[in-house]
Image 1 (spheres, rainbow, N blue to C red):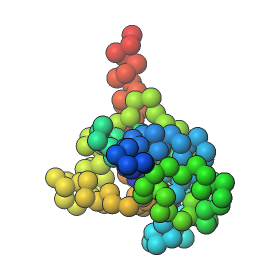
Image 2 (cartoon, rainbow, N blue to C red):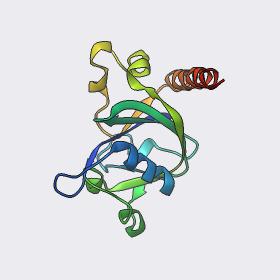
Image 3 (cartoon, rainbow, N blue to C red):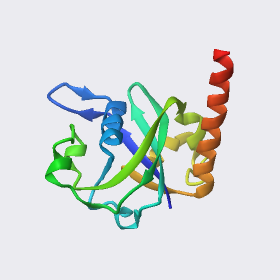
Length: 160
């Protein structure tokens, strides 16, 4: 299966904002993705699945990378609990293993997500991204990969 994995800005100490990209980098570094026990897709996650990272932040909304799923979802261990930072992650009860790649040149989400098949109202695309995990079609995954390849080509030409 293919997944759109959502991370947003978190709240830390009073008046502290932990940027979504920082939360994502921590998760990728430690090889974990956090979800709620109530997530309807929790039991469908399987090793070999693929994911796309969507970052929603005051700094912008981007698709920031991809990952391979390495394990089924399981309850958070004390070791995993020790790396969790801020709210809402502190409320999540389960995790699964990932092997992720963060792109040097994230894609502006507004260029890609409205074209994905699960988005029915293209003008209100961000409304479809509540929660941390959403199934997407293989075609939607390939769409993201194509956009990233095109963006990398443009960036390479700009450097030349």
